[in-house]
Length: 427
Image 1: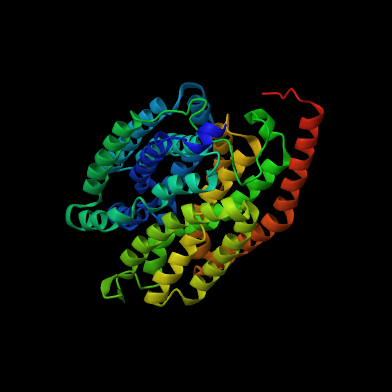
Image 2: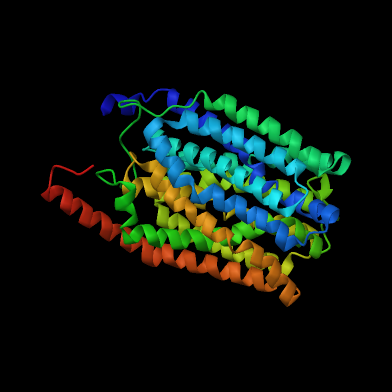
């Protein structure tokens, strides 16, 4: 509508800001995990592959239940789902602070995954609904909160682990993060008719597709496979950054960049989170102008090159910091590009559920993470893991350009032809 397009109001930007902050508060559940792996191993003697099962459990529950949580959001609104999710996230880290057995560690991961998925899926879906004209940018900014939200707490968490123990870090940060999400959830709401603009630069579906309809389309499953391929390498880097730096014997080596000196692992972790956040709105914004598939081709190719370079040159502390940053910069955009494309293809009405269905691909990819530790043990180095991840990224880049792009064009042509022949559209 012309009026809503010219003056969409500030409410959607306030919704976006609240969503970004909520995402920032749950980011440590995934991106802060790497700092706890070695201390847990040192205290209890559990092998790292067993400890990383907790990470996989977290990601599986965070992703595979998002469609169900998305259904609740589409039906009852975002407020209650984020409120419950914030409570669960806080409880999970309190449980981690008390966990003295692997089953309890896994149970805490499951609770955290359920809570984080509720917050993540809701905030991304809400952004897609409020910003049909800027889906790439809005999804990217929201996902930026999850990607970069933990950057400011990298040093405080590490300091608390060293001075008070990892249990205190779990307890204090868990309670603080959970309380903030609960408070912000009270401000979230779904858009009403006339509150959002209806004009976009990107070609979009002329009707809303239900989750059942979306699952029956080949294009959904092509995106699902690509998401798995991309997410596997990034999750490996996220979960294993600390162990990789330790095995490369550069974790505690000082690195100076621009007069700032930190250990290689601390510098890399901070740098990675900032770039992993910035890439999401950046590539999302780019995709609003040049197209999702073209942007995927560029970013996925960079990711593959970055992972390969890290495997070759990562033993140098400075290059480890720089190249790990490149890897995260070229990886994080999947969390803006894929949700935006889901909204473009299947419409906004069921955007939270449909985006959640695709997001389960991250959980599928997480199944690979424990095996990276095993593969490293078998081969004696991280080289095979890096090569496999790089190959998957390059393959995904080629699929974006030569499979997804023509498939989407054909899909829209058929959809528009059917719409013209049948003016009354199914909902």
